[in-house]
Image (cartoon, rainbow, N blue to C red; front, side):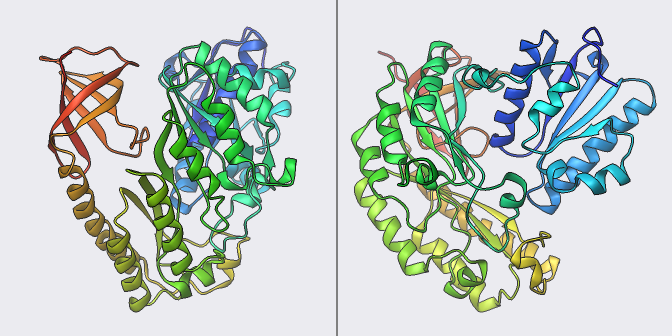
Length: 437
């Protein structure tokens, strides 16, 4: 049975990463084009139908998705909402199991089944709307997904099972979308993909990220371009040369490295050694002065010894990353890692993650304290109470440092840039005052 057009408001609930958020933006856009009243994460008392866009990346994310589905199913059972639909990575991968375990959901859809989801609302999918999607972030920045899927075979990762093989979008379509976003007030675009540096290989038979950046840097009114989720193996170094050339490409690179031990990297099937990684990072820092590097590490991969973990700690201490996140390994069905014995106890994984983050906390504090007294350009994201919160070009939304301004003494507009002087620093925040012109 299809949802009626006059059935009330539709709320899209997003779990997981920024790539999922872009998918939700497209869902909302398509529904609105079909004349439905669709919004993102509405209050529950205003909702008739809920679409849960799930994440299935790691065990904690899967559990959060299941808990969210159960929550809305409970609301449906009590008559507070009419229908519940589920889409996204978890639904794609475990559709049959979910249909058996939680049959109260009206329908489950995979990551590639947006037209089928829309059909439940009598809405036809329109491909041309991809470049005109609704923006669910603050209006001054937006994510731009340049490709879908991944061809890598990392032993711990199930993304290819949920998102399929790598599929690049054309340079022309991405430039047009960027222009459209800028016309709507976007000042910063964050490039995202499951694997950014593979961009173009499927479509053009060669890596084209550098050329895409050249084209995007020419878009008038686009002040910041930021790169997320770059893979280190066979990294196209010309990307760094383009970054150094254009002032509107942020001196920022998010490159998950996962480990600092050759033995663990080999078991993870990362296709790179520690020496090759350090050579790449040295080249990056020489080519792009003041480059901020964000990375992610994975502790507790099967077989990780104390010695291998010590290698990881030493690697982090040597490389002194600006930003670093840590995940604890969990088996993912269908991956080659799941064939190995998960022999690192959960308590030990937790201790190792804590130790690594303690090392990073000190590094982050030293990086931030070195900025005290410097003048930086800051993009103002929001105001809370008597404080403004902004970011430098070295910080991405949600995951990185913030710059805090005193709203009782300084006035800035949300979405504008401000020139500030850094007056104080903690491990993960900077404090500043506006430089009076």
